[in-house]
Length: 477
Ligand SMILES: Cc1ncc(COP(=O)(O)O)c(C=O)c1O
Image 1 (tube, rainbow, N blue to C red):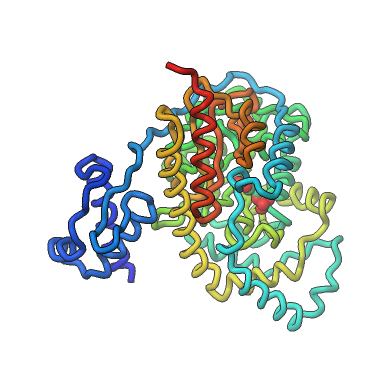
Image 2 (cartoon, rainbow, N blue to C red; image 1 turned 120 degrees about the horizontal axis):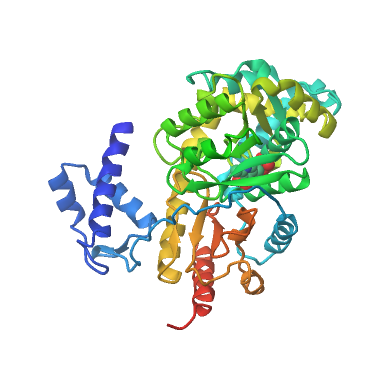
């Protein structure tokens, strides 16, 4: 199975390179299925699978009785460059604007391009429904567990520990605190290791929720330059933390939000070593780690953490359902502080859902579901990239996500995505303006698009209209 998958993937990649290099131009016909099968010594079904993949990526189209043809798409776009960030930490003020986007973009009739949410049809809702029924019948006493005492489900924690077995230093079972979401896990960790007025290092661009957490806790953000390919600059973090004035670092090294890149292992190792030397508390968000597009599950920084100064936060919101309300944190050396924050914030996490999740993971159903979901998200991100390349102004750049479900778009410098947001909403189009990913007002000409939905004609049309709106506001040459 793996073998045949690799064969069609390889053929798809070769053909894609051939097209992208301009060897076959838009409108030109691809070699016939029979010819490809003979020349590449592949079965007809393998060739068809490769062609189907290119079709889904929007590169080719099938014409009845005529064969496959290269589609009319614009040239592939460059990735944005890392930006220079301010040297000093700043107080954050993004929350009001985030809340406005949250309220306006969730209205009926608005195309779902703003928040990073999966389409319900991609989620294993029927299987979860059956499990909930079974769990409540088999374990009626779980309904008695009150909200005051946190009782982490041992079978669930065991599953989380098993998934970390191959790390250089796997977390121990007693490090885990089960939470109601990744948001909760991040909030508990921030409060556990900082005091108002402290400085926290963040990626640039940074996931806006992290900035909101700093804002509401009276913390200052120090934006660290971040490369759209390799992630947060370790050199810059080294310089920024020399004077011991940075209390913690918050980051998303696997399929970051919004850039979608995966930090290479060598950088993760260096990051773990540097943060250990500096005594820096690290809050790592790994919510997209299981949503990698490459073959191997990327390891988190926590995998290289020898001194237990990394707190690893995640949840099942993007993989199973945001409605589950189930996340966790491997707390490292901060167990006591995080457990206290959990107790005073929300008490316990649902005992029923913990058992459901434990059984879902134990049965192997999670891993099977993830194999499909990863491919779905990858297909959707690729289709979104193709649509942006086709419809947005020529100088637009965009990221090449290695996982997750968002795409970061850099518009020509003169466009201000924040200023155009109201017009977009009035036209039924939403996105998250780039400035919400910066504490110092950077990224005004950027925006983030959600790729959590299948790329239907309606989504494609929404991207087309958004591209046209941006193009209308470009200065005439
Ligand atoms: C990086 C990142 N962390 C956390 C979350 C929130 O996760 P949860 O719904 O579990 O709170 C999101 C949601 O978009 C996210 O992108």
